[in-house]
Image (tube, rainbow, N blue to C red; front, side):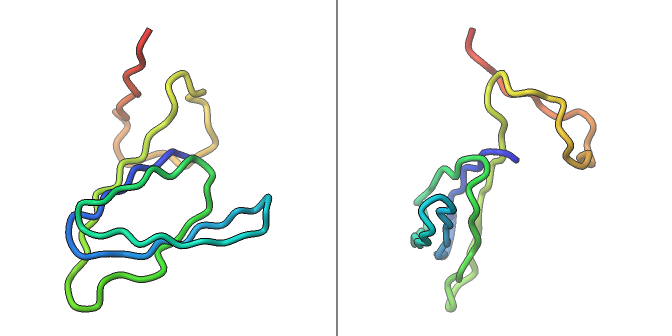
Length: 88
């Protein structure tokens, strides 16, 4: 699991989120230039994108500073993964 920062560069999208503890579900609409931070473990999905124009995303996945690097995730294609720059 990674934190995720997503920005819509063009078009628009509706994202859906689950709240497993409260049993709720909510949606948010992002337009070009808007962004959202999605915490590690937050279940989410793309509900829809703009019908009349392509939607272009920028998504950045990152770990917390000081996070344990020994995870059970599948290896990435690139072995030279960048580590987060943490302040001392």
